Length: 350
Image 1 (cartoon, rainbow, N blue to C red):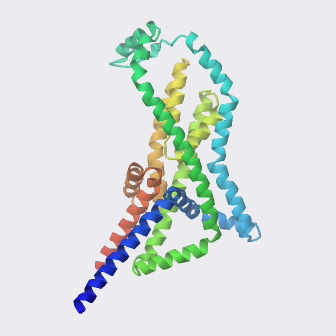
Image 2: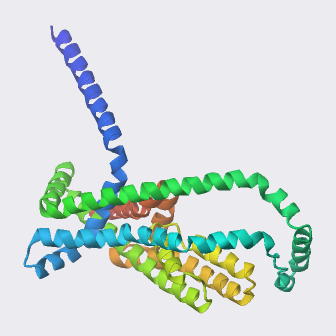
Image 3: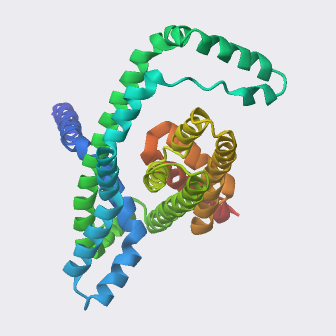
């Protein structure tokens, strides 16, 4: 009889595990599309909670008024820039069409400045002259195999922009819900963490919040700094639509695409227009921005979370490579938690 009871208990345990596993899988598939927006909302709420509290105090301690203001702020930061970019492109679209029509009648520049490059400048300049002397036929033949790849890449980026706007909308909704019940949710998270580990639970949650806030503020401050430097360089080099380009640069920095894409397009345009000096200036600015993008962000995160600089730097880079944009937050937070837990454990032993 005891053997039969043990067998029954084992089958019951297996069935319970299967049912729980099935529920977890189905639940994950249902909420998978909203996970990015939800985690994004968690990052935003943790980083901007002090701001929301200050706004609430200014608005007669009415939470719903502060939620309205925060919704406007989040919409302005995440969605309105894309609308302004699309509107600007639409307003200036006829200029682009006219330029495209006259493109076939324009002569390609000779790029004589290539000869000033040491070692391989003369050879590169000669190859370029050979290309333009054949009316671009050889150039078209060379790049033709890559046209399909480029079109596919552009379509993929258009899809990514659409998904980004969708996730931004989901983020705003979840952010407002978290702002509304922030105190209760925080209390529940601390209770859950304490339930999982009475020794490290509360410390882990506190450290995670500090790391997330430091990462978020580091990203925003870095993006603003890079956008200001890049925008100033656009004005100095007389780039058309410098305001729109600065806005795109800021969005790319916040989204962790980096300043390279925008700066490279501006550099190519300047050299194409024959503005060699302006192109060289933008190359120097692009190098400066690329360096600042990594170093400044890691430094600000370290300052906010009081963690080793290399730990944060590796967390930012490794997180981006491993998990994409969300890895920017996941990498430093996970490394910070692991570092603090090991440090606490070693201190206890000593």
